[in-house]
Length: 357
Image (cartoon, rainbow, N blue to C red; front, top):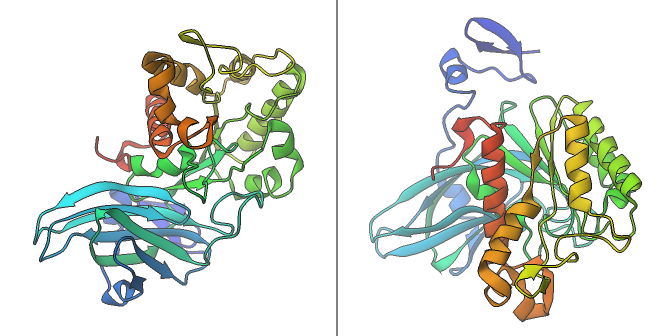
């Protein structure tokens, strides 16, 4: 096995050799350079779609946005509508480079067969009011890549159909190249079904390794779970993650837009049909297992109640689908920001992987 050299010591790194300078820079070598042959594989104008025949894995991507002749505004999505680069304005002749790391998997969206497998390989989509891309670079990510796993339900998952958008699809924009978000969530999943289905927990756990972080959000579909069952399931998942050397983080579920007057009622606050306060039970598991917690219920409650019943509709699919549980693209972005803030406060992701504010 080849080795990684860090500060004069020999460190095993899945067969990868890095120079001392690269290792000292956090394990990241040079970003992949734009390759004209890759740009030739793109079609369309608005959006521009590019598909590359690569096997499942993690890939570093460089995109050069803009055009030498006209002004442009471009945002970049990968795979199943994962936002990698937010809307970027460029003047005529102005070019901007951005780099990120993306997880390629099959199925590329929901992991429970709820949606189709998607397009084989890596798909990049350049959208926005006037999208322009003038260069693309692509290379396999090294073993030093930090991996952030997500385990959850439809409010988290990579939804493949507009307007449905999970907050996990909007989380990658918070990170630079070197961190790969792996969204192993699915619509309809509860703490019970996640453990029972072979394509969910049994498929996720073997992927975990020391240094990974795994965010766990359940509750929306634990409608008939007793407090004892919910706590036992979360405890099993937490301990199973720790057994791999990865770091679990519990995330209480995002609220529903269910009001009584000016405040959210018990349904909005994810109290189930048996009267079980599921976020409270998750908090108790976090305390009992000494596991970090992001209280997304409390954070999203503050946002929704702050907006009020009418303005909060924009966060959900209330107007489009009469749906006060699933989030719009805007709502998913807001809640992803809350998760990212909570995760940054915990200090579990090295500073070098955070995108600039």
